[in-house]
Length: 447
Image (cartoon, rainbow, N blue to C red; front, side, top):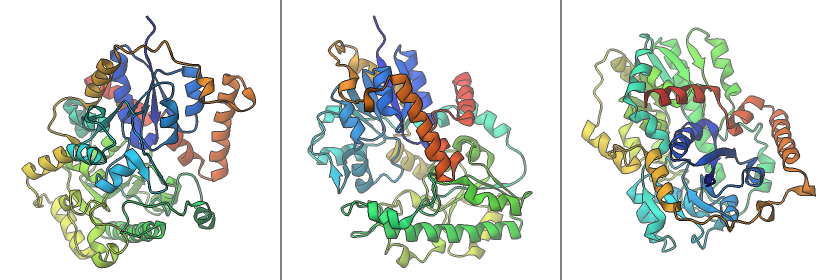
């Protein structure tokens, strides 16, 4: 009997590939034949791989609905850090200018928490059998205690401050931002769930510039006061070259490591400096102190631009320390360095937060639970009636698949070169990352 083929969508390599590889491992163990594709080459991969199942990263991507006409579609969100009603509904149902009015074509959505389950049921579009709360596959690596202990033992004794934040409207992986064209091309009905009611893109731009300005001040202060060595991990949406000047100016004090995996980055540092990024939640899992620079931004003005709730200030950001001044921030770093720092929240509260967001109390691997559920869901399916994928994803000029694939790859490289941020562009779309694969091999060895 021919093996069931599963195509897995990789929406963002730096953010998603490690979790996808762990999920792929569990699917392969159950006898599925799997391949990973990115957004740029997905349509050709449908033609060449002929999947029976498509694992999509979002429900609101048109390719997911198109694929459902000839295969089963499961949604495994690759994002969703700010898990609020507004942001989660945008992942599963689209935004103001394009929303799903029917979700019967979705076989099942795998959710990170019960609250998202309730929000989707409220829409009266989803049926309970379409939804399953499992957690996030990309957090499975933190359940591998043997691997985490090895990473911790490899840590240098020198005190290290990790810096991770997102200001993607100031620096993007795909090159210069060209704001006039951005606004010209923008759909007038487009909305952004994390802004205030009636807010728009300019609020996000204001937010990102404010984050960047304050974070640069904090980094400079840490260096001048010799608080510790700094490791900066740029956001997966940003161009790492924008931060090269820091490493050149302070070669013995700061390293910019865009290729370092997030678990290794967090294992190496003693504290995390961030804005209100959910990287802090993964730091909390590893019991690392988290300091947010949010307290340095005038609160009233900040919340005139972004929604307090949708940006996590009513939930997980409360678990980050938010000093109100540079001086106060410096004192907290010294306390952490001297091991006199007292966390503001108990372990019990942290465990509850992680469980509410990520179904963390489950000892099962999320990847294994998803793989088993897919196996049980499709074991009686008859895939013999599938049509030729050429009817659903036609190739221009009726080119041979191998040639179309080659030309698409060449086009990706051309766009990357033209962007001026070749490495950042290719890192975002590439389905192979040397550092992620190295960590994944270690995960396999100790799992």
